[in-house]
Length: 239
Image 1 (spheres, rainbow, N blue to C red):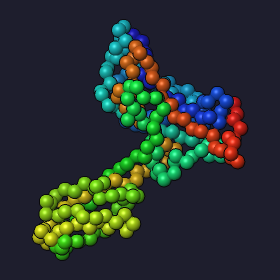
Image 2 (image 1 turned 90 degrees about the vertical axis):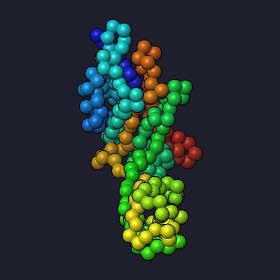
Image 3 (image 1 turned 90 degrees about the horizontal axis):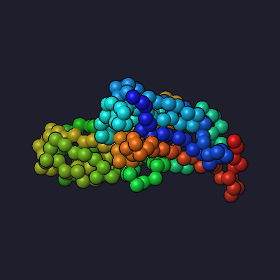
Image 4 (image 1 turned 120 degrees about the vertical axis):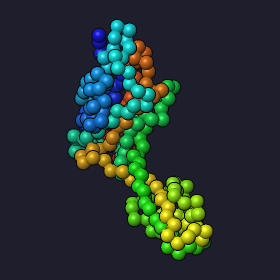
């Protein structure tokens, strides 16, 4: 029996001559640690990334197969305080919980992970106070900026109809004129998630079509940073 690689994750940066970025440590979260142990996998760290391996039999078949769409999650922790001085961080604007992921990558896509924002959901419960064609409710949570009415999920009453959402004042307007006083309903809406303390970004690798079969792989996923531009030219690279 041998260990064969499932995927490799590397952090790249155009600032460095060899393209490899040594400025982060990459740590699995607690769920991934349990997943790795359960499925007889091993994580091999590099200075610029890591490799995930799994124990296979003589036919290169995993001894314990990974479920479809199972997720490996890692934390990127910045070790170089000067990183922000030579890195273009425009893609991080307005991202409270950045996450790099292969969730939308297919078998034919490039292997550069896509930067998204992690989204959490909040639930609030309301009751009709005064039935009306336009009754207003102030949200108590912290809805994600720029939400529109179709971003909300409504449950609990067919007599209360959503009409409008004012994202500036966090006011939800519903039509409750057909509902009795005290009629309850529930809404769910996206809120900005928060990363763990000291985490620069999360990485999520799903067991999807972007992963090759073991005997065809391993696939190498990349997180790519670019050097900051100053005065129309790129900051000089270093080794």
